[in-house]
Length: 166
Image (tube, rainbow, N blue to C red; front, side, top):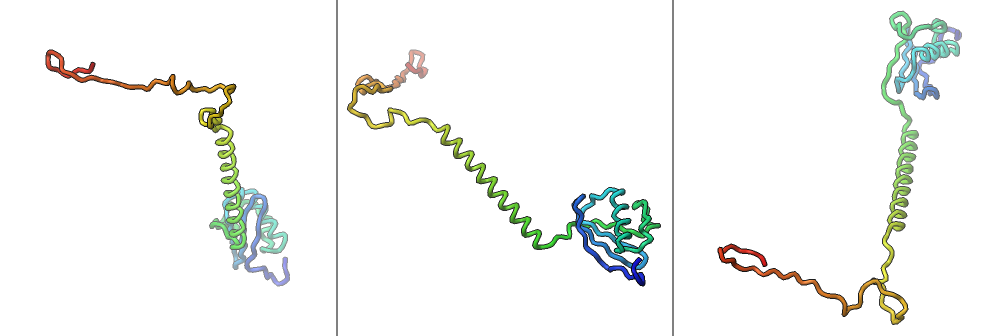
């Protein structure tokens, strides 16, 4: 136990397993633990309280703490409130997310462009300018062999005076 029973009023901790940010407050007769996430099991909560008591952050009477579910006897309050984030960490996290998004979008664009170029139709010889070389066969018939397509429909009246197409 610390000399004179003086404990730090408020301490900030970060936990790696499970990942969480904790604020421990010592008040007369009670200990308040504020967590950013509710990801501690009852066993992990009991271990944390015993650890804090053994290290002198909270009174020694919590060193033999067993069950975090019994709050009326233990005087330990768990408060789950959203993340207690550092603005600098938030800015770095936002920058990482933006860079990751730009990288993924660039990768998708590159894949789509390569797919478009690999599957583009090959240039046809009919689209290339004609050469005087007769040895190159042409895929289209000569111009004199082409016949224009004409659709002719004659409208007329039949003997029963109805309109028919011939």
